[in-house]
Image (cartoon, rainbow, N blue to C red; front, top):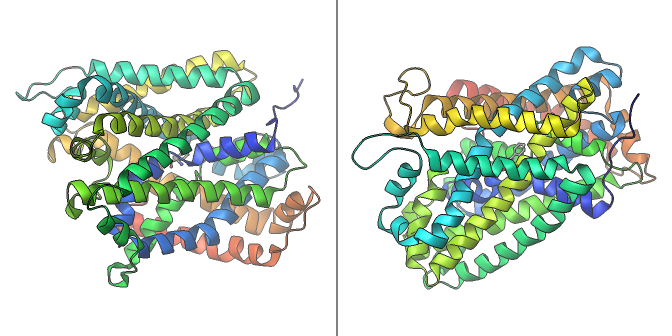
Length: 466
Ligand code: PHE
C-alpha cells in the first residue's frame, strides 16, 4: 500500500532545504536585536557556544530519528516500537500548525512591504508607524477597518507556499530552495556592504565585536538558548520530516554542521547589517525593538541611507525568501503527517491545509488592530501593541511547545531508544561517529537539563524564549 518515500535528489538539495527552514524571520529580525541587548560581541560568543554544544547535537538527533523511522514525527515513535511516546510528535505537529498560522501572515506583511518600498516609500518615511498600523486596519483618526491589504498579501504568500509544496519534495521544495537560498545570500552580501560602508557605521561594527561582559546576565544565556532553538527549527516536526527524506548514504554529522553553520552565519551577518546601519542612521538606542522593529524602526534607516529605497526593496525581498523557505518547511511537515497517516493526496491536503491555516491566521492579523474584541483576542489594556491572541500563540509555541517537544526527543533518545541507536543510524552511512561518547552525555544529561531550565524559567519568570 505504501508508495516509495520521497527523497532529496542530492546532498546540496537537502542542505539548502534544511538551511532554508532554519534561516527565517528569526535570524533577520530577532537575532540582531537580541545580540544588541546581550552586549554585541559577548552575545555572539555565547550564541556560538550554544549552537556547537546543543544546537548541532539536537539537530542531529531529530534528523537521525527521521532517517531511522522514514516517516513523519507522530508516526516515528510508533514505527520505532514506542507508540506511547507519540505525544512528543503531536506537540511538534500542533506547534508547527500554530506557528504557521501567524508566521505566514507576517510573511504576507513582508511581501506587502516589498511593494511598499518599491511604490510608496515616501509615505513610509513620513510616518512609518502610521503606515504599518494603517496596513493592519487602524487609522490615524482612531477608526478601525478590516485590514484587506494585509489579508490580501497574506493570501498571496500562502498561495506561493502552496504552489511550491504541491510540486513535492524534490520538484518543489528542493528546487525552490536551490534558487531561494543563493538569492538570499546574494542579498545579504549586498546589504552588508551597504551597511558597513555608511558613515558612522564603525561604532556599530565595534559594538558587535566588543566583549562587554558587564552586560551578560543569566537572561542573556536563556535568550541565546531560546533564540538558537527557534532559529535552528529545533523542537518542531520539521527536522524529523526533512531527515526522513535523507538518503541512507549521507554523512549526517557533516550535513548537520553545515546547516547549523549556515543558519548561524546568516544570523551573524544580519547582525552586522542591522546594528551598524542603525548606529549610523538612528543612533544606538533604537536597536532591539523586536517585531515591529522590522516594519517600523528600519524605515528610519532606509530614509537616511543613500539609495535607501532600493535597499529597502532588497531587504524585504531578503526577509521574504527567509520567511518563505521556513514556512514551506512548517507546512510540509504537517502535509507529510496528513498524507501518510490518512492517505490523502498531496495536492488536496496542501490546498485544504493552506486554506485553514490562512483563515485562522486572519484572526491574528485582524486582532492586531481591526477587531478589538476586548478580553477575548485583545487585552484592551496595553492598547494596540499587545493583542492577546498574538501573545498567546507566540507564548504557547515559543515558550512551551518548542522546548517540550525538544525535551521529549532528548528523553526518548537518551533514555528510551538509547543514544546507541542514533549512533548506529549515523554510522550506517559508513562514517564513524567520533564524538559518540560526548554526544551520549549531552543528550542524556546536558541538553535535558538546559531545556528544563528554560522551560521552568520561562513559565515562572517571564523570560522570553524565542
Ligand atoms: N527557524 C525559523 C526562523 O528562524 C523559524 C521556524 C521555527 C521555522 C520553527 C520552522 C520551525 O525564523
